[in-house]
Amino acid sequence: MANPLYDGLFGQHVGRDTVFLHLPDERTLTYAAFLDMAAQYAAALTDMGLAPGDRVAVQIAKSPHALVIYAACAQAGLVFLPLNTAYTADEVAYFLENSGARVVLVDSGKRDAILPIADRCRAQLETLDADGTGSFATKAAGFPPHYDTVPRSEDDLAALLYTSGTTGRSKGAMLSQKNLLSNARALQSEWRFTAQDVLLHALPIFHTHGLFVATNITLLAGGQMIFLPKFSVDQMIDALPRATTMMGVPTFYTRLLADNRFDAALTRHMRLFISGSAPLLAETHVQFERQTGHRILERYGMTETNMITSNPYDGERRAGTVGFPLPDVEVKITDSTTGATLPRGAIGEIEVRGPNVFQGYWQMPDKTAEELRPDGFFITGDLGQIDADGYLSIVGRNKDLIISGGYNIYPKEIELLLDAEAGILESAVIGVPHPDFGESVVGVLVAAPGQTPDLDAIRSSIGTSLARFKQPQKLVVLPELPRNTMGKVQKKALREQFADVFA
Ligand code: MCA
Ligand code: AMP
Image (tube, rainbow, N blue to C red; front, top):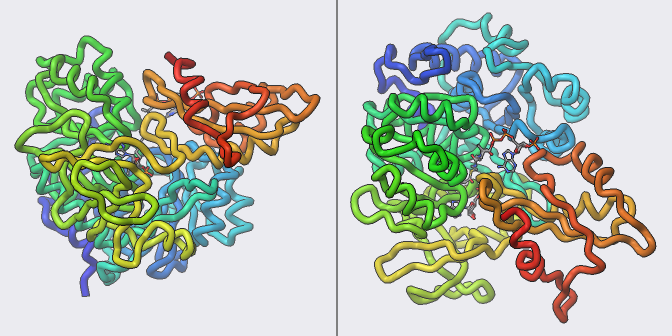
């Protein structure tokens, strides 16, 4: 029996001496070196007592080694669970408890903070640093670079990716081998990725965008990546002449456009620029074409579904739209209340079905049932409209979600913390327009009777448990929150009131 994901992505379909990663300082990593290391890592994980289906939580800086762990998990039939490096120890504790991860890999700098949590959760902790050193690397170095790939079926779990929720509790999206592989194949073909492509990669690799969309497609094509540790305008401009394609969130593109070195001459040789994870303003699309002569290809996806739609490679890339459903993916627009399918042109809930759609939320059957219909359609929580030519536009959200610089932030999680602070009666967290991040977080507070909240103390208190990117960039105090006749907080009114705070 085979292992579809490992065979599909990492099978020996590329010359072993082909370069896979271009790293800073002109270093390179070949496919052979990458796969040999993956075999050693897989052997080390198996030696630690892990069996197929066990979860491996990973919170390490972006590096080739973080990708090697992903490959090793695929080869050993383990479930890869990547975590945002910005998450605090409190946040990591939840993911370890909820997932029952048997191993957690962290940078050595995080070891002391995470070790007590790992012990409590009975997870084995090992360190792995960006330079490839650490206790796990030492262990792995003791194994030969050969490992008998563990057989798996396409419905077996490949990854568990946590997405925040409207209740404030994160949910683990269970992604099967088929989910990942079918989507990578569809995108590779739609976007024409080949072994000649060199993808400029500056995204984090703990989310779908940088991990599955960018990396899986490159692996399938046998292409190369210029692998930057993080986004920096200078490094991007320096690397662009050696790339053929680039993927990014809208913030990448607005930052590049603000630099006058980013012009038609610098990008003339580029084949494709792709944007996603957050809305690309139509004006950014237009400015991009004016400044470079390229039309950005915008696509739409979610953690639970991988990619759903894409603007066409050939044909019109229509600004303000996310294009057409990918092959084998069905999209319909429904009435949020009744679930009935709406006619073309109507605005409603976007629902999606296909081999890309996840298996459900880890050990949360009720949450799964709320969002995944028995007939296989997943309710995205995004509001959309399909035009006469079949292009989908995302016109709003039916979920209380903020997207800041491509990161999702669920207000409930922050409101629960703010409500618990001294001197606070209640709070409402909203997203308002931000010139760099698209949206940014504002916390609106109401003081408990007779109290004057200490905003600095509140900031530092929530800072211990909440990743920095989720923390409100602004806290304001109001006498009361606007409510409708049913008593529900009117966030729309608050968003209007504070629309200009970051202008
Ligand atoms: C960093 N900071 C942020 C963000 N990023 N604050 C709000 N929103 C953010 N996105 C804060 C830091 O905590 C820090 O705060 C300060 O900004 C500067 O930090 P630094 O690390 O230098 O930030 P940066 O390098 O400028 O990062 C901005 C960024 C990055 C490049 C836009 O956030 C990024 O790479 N975003 C991509 C996210 C992504 O891959 N999303 C895909 C999700 P302080 O100075 O106060 O300490 S997958 C997905 O959505 C679906 C499936 C899809 O369709 O793709
Ligand atoms: P995540 O939970 O990180 O997977 O984020 C998924 C959400 O990102 C979707 O439900 C959308 O709201 C949003 N998203 C992704 N791509 C786009 C896009 N091209 N335009 C607008 N929103 C997008």
